[in-house]
Amino acid sequence: MHAVDAGHAPGLMPGWRTSMGGHFRCRRCGHDDGWSFDMTVSEIRRGLPCPTCNARKEGP
Image (cartoon, rainbow, N blue to C red):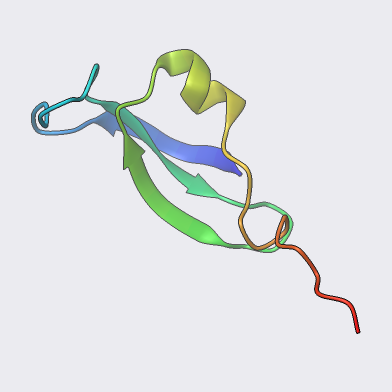
């Protein structure tokens, strides 16, 4: 999934390294993952794997 928006959280939560985050959406299936925070700029640019497109297909 690619970031469609990026920004900062209002503040740091306990255990976070950074307040940076991104809103991620899959271009293939349209899955919207919403906002994810505690990410570096490189992680946001790299994107996240889509749970819908990467789900295991169970065979018979």
